[in-house]
Length: 193
Image (cartoon, rainbow, N blue to C red):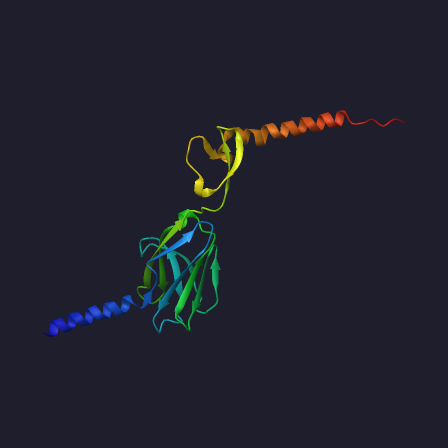
């Protein structure tokens, strides 16, 4: 009988530790946009440092930003963190999202021994609103194509990845402008004394 009570106590103790910090299981962001993650913690953890790290492995994740123990926002590169100690919530904001920002992240509380943490899966959806300037080889013309209708057809490719366009831009265009300048200079009206 006492064994089952001890097991129940261990299970409940483990449960209370696991719920010291909570956060969303997944968060979605839009490429080039921003996303916000809010992680809540239990009473007693207000003055502890909070952090946001990247990586599926808890032990090897890379801490991107951490609080300084106050409620001041701390920003590092494209990531910021702010701790609201009164409401026991810290907020992480990631800006100027890229597709390769999609990964496994952790909300954490730094403490003696093993830190507390909760896993957050971040997914980044491609931007479907920003038009892209593309060179169409079939028609030999430039066109703005909405991102939602872009295809990976061999006839359509990014303008800057076109060898012909780059050759035209960096070699032929300067030569043409130089020759035009020389012709205009030679054919300028001469002053007569």
